[in-house]
Image (cartoon, rainbow, N blue to C red; front, side):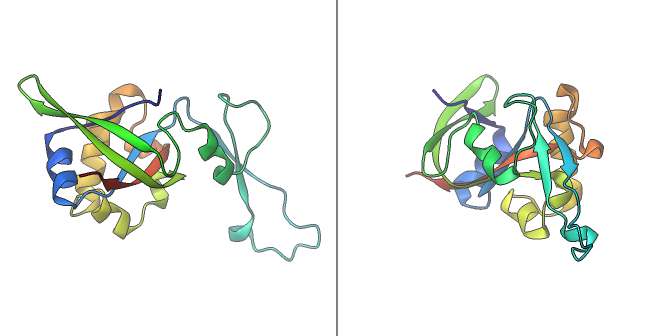
Amino acid sequence: MNAILIFDKEQTLAFRSGRKTQHRVPLSPQPKWEAMPSVADGSAPTAEIPKRLTWSEVGTSPIDPLELVRFCPYGEVGEIIFITANLGFGKTEQLSAKIVDLSVESLDDISDEGVIAEGLENWTQLAYRWDRWHAKRGFPWETNPISWKFVLEKMS
């Protein structure tokens, strides 16, 4: 059985209204980025040197971030994922969504469009929400944690 996403009341409202189509969850434990050696003739600009991850959950060999999604505990593209919506005062609701895209990215890689797709208006809101949910678990915003990035489609 796949892990279940948890939304708070604001996230639930944004998801229901169609404003929240992306959700991120930090990888635990955090992988380590490793820059791969540059091209021998030096022709590859530094910014384009591919990066790979080492993640203790899947071994000690570096792995391409695109390959890492195979190990996502929440599911894979095309699968239905379940969401527990905490509505406050002990009330919860079960929602479901289809994973239409799944990737791994650091918080620094989130685009302005990604902030909007999280159902938020600006970076300040995203950083505040991230820390409210994840800082106490050891993944504060300022450490630029690597996260699972889900693109979700609401199920009717």
